[in-house]
Length: 81
Image (cartoon, rainbow, N blue to C red; front, side, top):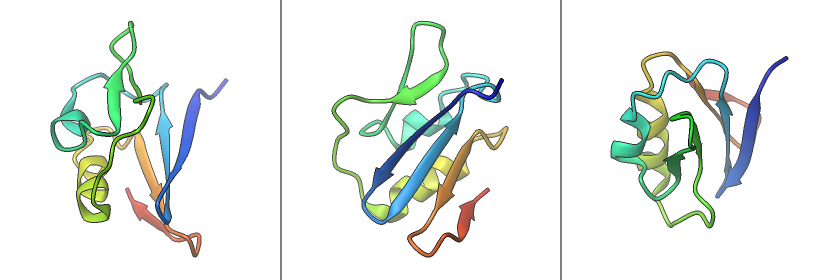
């Protein structure tokens, strides 16, 4: 069974594929305002979310080495991966 978390941030929808995440923390280095580890060291969203620039958020998702972060814009176009 797939384990996804999804949040709308600005005009972007961010989806975390928690079954794919290997916990490198690359996303948190660039997106500490948005991403955090859960107790199992798997990526999750911070609560509450902090402020982050759109381009910084896209880059934070792009650096995931296993493509566990999916970015979709308002038009439904997948930007990452």
